[in-house]
Structures are given as C-alpha cells and as structure tokens.
Amino acid sequence: MENINKITEIQVSYSTPRNEKVKVQNSEESYKLILACWSKHTIELQEEFKVLLLNNSNKVLGIYSCSKGGVTGTLVDAKLVFSVALKCNASAIILTHNHPSGTLKPSQADISLTNKLKEAGTYLDVKVLDHLIITKDGYFSFSDGGLM
Image (cartoon, rainbow, N blue to C red; front, side, top):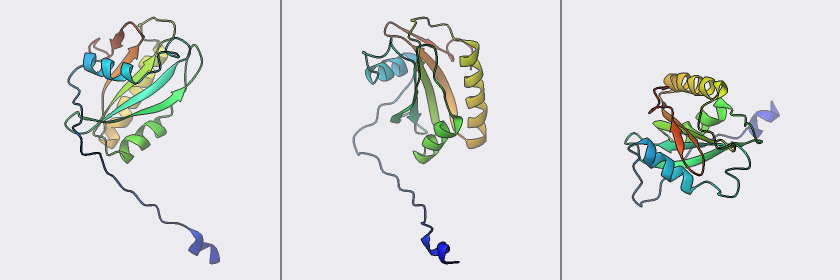
C-alpha cells in the first residue's frame, strides 16, 4: 500500500498566445501554411507526416510533426494523432504528408489511413477535414478530389 502515495496526479493545462490566429478556409491556404513549416532540405528526401490542428472556427492551434520515415513511407499511430489533438482541444485536423518521389497520386495505404483516421475522429468529435499530399511544387487534396 505504500506505493499508492507515489502515484502522481495527471494535470492538464491549456493556453494560447494572444496574437491573432490564422484561419484556414481552403486546401490551397492549408498547403501554403504547411509548406512554410516544412524543411525544404528534406521534402524530397524522406516522407514525413504532420497534422494541422484547428479550433472550432478553423483557426490554427498548431502543427504536430507526427512521424518521419524513409523514402517510400512513414508509420502513423492514430493514438498519437488524436492524443495530441485532444490535448490541444482541437475540433478539427488536417492531415498532411509529403511524397519524396514528387508524385501527387494517393496510394492505397494513404486512402486506408485517411479513412481509418476519419472514422476514429467521429468517435472523438474531432473532424478530419482534409488530407494533403504535398511536394515542393504542388499538392493533392483528398477533400477537393472527392476522397473525404
């Protein structure tokens, strides 16, 4: 019974800077915003997965770098994606990852992951608004492409 006193209480806090937040209104704005935060030195080197976290007015709370992988893929853990979204009190998220090959066509794995995360979000009241595949020269939006 002595170990019970050693368990620490989990504390949650939340604050945002007072400066004006950027509002995302379409996929092009999302692409420009995420591209500005991407390393130009690695966008064609290795695949990375990032999540744009939004409040209920689609204003940006932040960007979470979820994973880095190899040339042809990266692993994405749904628990991590949503644990960060919930910790930030995000109401919506936009998924993003790059294709080092430069192709903008989604793979079957991209489509499956998007569907999995979209379904998980429905249970947690976190909307998955879009999934962008990006390159240094352009992007593909799952939402614009009718895949959401």
